[in-house]
Image (cartoon, rainbow, N blue to C red):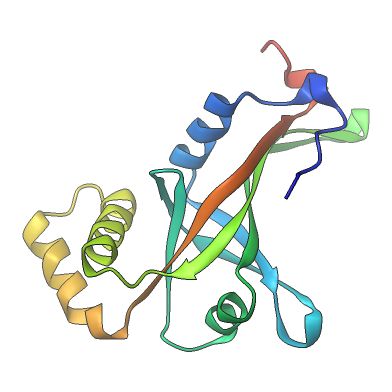
Length: 162
């Protein structure tokens, strides 16, 4: 598939800036094709590594059903959104990516991705405590990933060269 080029190229963030935003932030919005052909967008926590977005879910539910029915997904992360009322604008930075979502089935990849997710959100926890928490919930856990095919980032013109 050929993805659209950004219309306002001057405001486009570099690939490296996009990756930094994905690594730094803690939440994004997953968009998939939901029930009845309606878009389904859900905020979630994630971890980025190896050109993939990983997140967890229950072993049943709308998100999982949507991914199983259609693997095309997009994911959006807002890095900054400062409303400037006197200018009728906001100073923003965001990243949107497109890719194929799937259930992670490889045991090593499941363990690696849930461990990286746990470290991201509880960086000061001990390895023992983290491993116990993962082990306790492992049978309830389903890991999903998006293999990134296209990524773009955009910023407000007021932030360019800042």
